[in-house]
Image 1 (cartoon, helix red, strand yellow):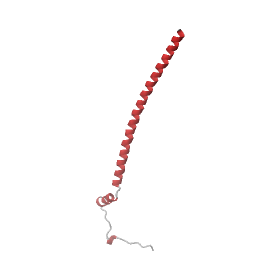
Image 2: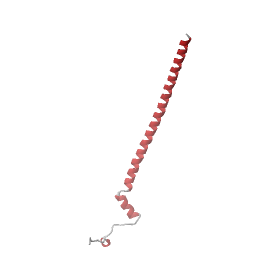
Image 3: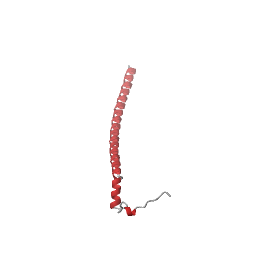
Image 4: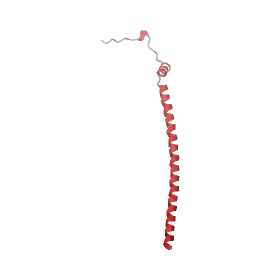
Length: 90
């Protein structure tokens, strides 16, 4: 009779340990899922910023923008006919 109670107590202890393991695993899974979602949001924000920066870089390097800056800030202009020099292959 005592051995049956001992086995029952041991089995009960194993069931409790298993239940605590399930609770811990479930909690850890929820924490990791929340971290994953946060990392995915951060990734999406970084992608959006990268696209914005690429568009901005394209706008700054556009030929018309370069020409405008050359005229306004550097006081450059296209050479007139009297300023052009032709170089021959000889």
